[in-house]
Length: 489
Image 1 (cartoon, rainbow, N blue to C red):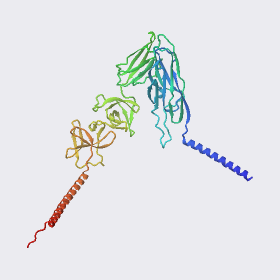
Image 2 (image 1 turned 180 degrees about the vertical axis):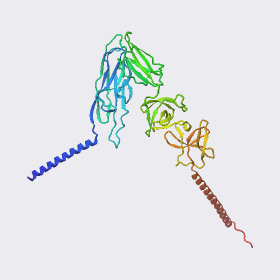
Image 3 (image 1 turned 120 degrees about the vertical axis):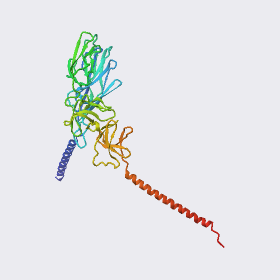
C-alpha cells in the first residue's frame, strides 16, 4: 500500500510539474512576441492584353498575391525574350505611392527593390510599437509594370517570367515568397494595325484625373503658375500609330485645353484625348504650411514680383512638408529662403534649415550671407563678457553698416548667430571683407608669462654675475699659489 501511495504522489507531482512548465512556456511565448505568424506571397507576371502583333506594346504587370503590411521588398527579378521585344519603360504600382523604388539592369534581367518611406525605422528599446506599413491588402497588388515593344520582325511566342521573387519584409509576419505564373503569348496578328490608342499618358509635375485608361479620352489636371509649357509624354499602343499633341505650349492663366490626336497605322481609325489644364494663379498649393521645431506654423505665400532677393540666390521648387513650393537657394548654403506668413507679423522672407527645422526671419540690415552659412547680428547675452580693449562701434562695409566692437588696433568684431542658432564673436577683415570666428587672446596669461620671463631673466643675470665673480676669485687663488710673490730681504 505504501508503494502504491508513493506512486500516486509521484504522478501528481509529475502532472503538476508538466502543467507548470507548459504554463511557463505559454507566458514566455506571449511576452516575447518574437515568434511571427507565417504568410506566403506569390509573385506572378500577368499581361494586360493577349492579342499581339509586331510593333504592339506589351504591358506586363508584376503582381503580389497580397501585401500583409510589407515595409520593403526585393530585389524582384524580371526577364523577357530580349530577341523578340525591347524594353520601353517601367512604372511603379499606383497603390505603392509611399514606396521608393530602385531599379537595376544586368544581362537583360531587371531587378526592382522597393522600400516604404512612411514605415518607422523599427521598435525602440523602450517601446513595443514597431514600424507601421502604409499598405495592407489581402487582395493582389501590382508592384510594378514593365512596358515592352514587340519587335517589328518578330514571329512566334514571347516569354516573360520572374527569375527571383526577392525578399518581403513585414514587421509582424514572417513572409515566404515564391514564383507564380509566367507569360507565354503568341505573336500572331499580321497586317496593318488599326489600334489608335495610347498606353501611357503623363504630364511632368502634374497628376491627371481620372487615372489613365486607354479607353478614357478626357482628363484634367493643374500646374503651377511658373509652368507655361506642359511637358506631356505618351506611349502609343502600336509602334506605327501617329501621335500629335496640340495646345501644350504658351499656357495662359486659368483653363487651357490640350488635344492629343492619334491616327492608327491603317490611316482610318483615329482617337482624340483631351486634357483640361488649369494653370494656377499662385505657385503655392492651397493650404500649404510649415511647422518649425518649436511648433510654430507658417503659411506659404507667393513672393511679390518686386521682392529683393539676396545676391547669389536663385528660384527653384522644393518639396517641404509634403508641398511643392517656390524657394530660393544658394550653392553651399544649407538654409533656403521662403516667403511665409507667421499669422502676426507682415509676410516676408524667412530662412528655413531643414536639418534643424528652424525658421528665422530674413533681416537684410542684420544678415551676412557667407559661402557656407547665413549669419545674423544678435544682441550679446548678459553672461558673455566683452574684453575691455573692445568698445562699441559701427563699421560701414559699403553695402551695410555693421554694429559691433572695435579695439585700438582697428580690429572689428561683431556678435553673430549662424543658421543653426549657435552664436559667437566673429572678426571682420576690413581688407578683403571676409568674416571668420574670433578667438580672444588670454591677456592674463600673457601678462603672467611676461612676469615670469622678467623674473627668470633677472635670475639668469644674477646667476651669470655670481658665476663670473666665482671664476674670477678661483683664478686669483690659483694664480697666487703657482706664482708666489718674492720675499723682501
